[in-house]
Image (cartoon, rainbow, N blue to C red; front, side, top):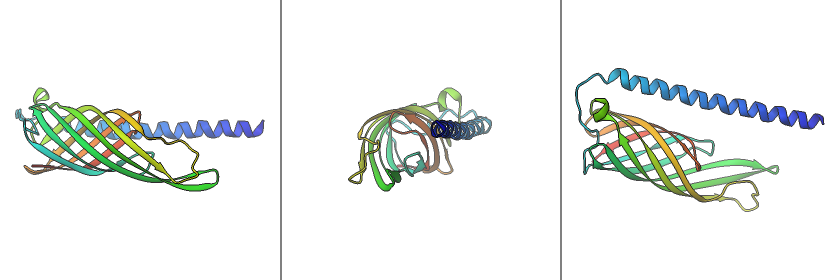
Length: 192
């Protein structure tokens, strides 16, 4: 009975920690969003990615399953809409049954984003967007691992922003979640 109470206490403690982590991510996102609105007091109504223009995105992120690395491309199909694709990799270690196991996760996904620059009157050196993504993730674990982790389809949503310090280069911050992964990404964007 005492072991059951300790186990219950540890589960509650773990849940509180995960709620606190989410709360910090929400705070960071709120500060980032407010910064975009405070800085964007210009009358420019130019889309950050023009119709027919491409953009390369790459960087790293936050995840409960290792440090993700990603590389993607966006393509402007409308002054306010982009579609794109992304490949990703993440690796991490997990202890299961008193043994340490290494896992790798490869992903390939497509996304669609709506860019709010024109309707929110945001200057073209800023980009505020939201959208959805669909992908397939291949989860690989060492032999003998009996824990959870399976390959399959992932559906999610993202919201993010970019700041372009030149006509070609920008920095990107994005938060997202879904049935495959949740977390955030930070990286660079290059228009071409």
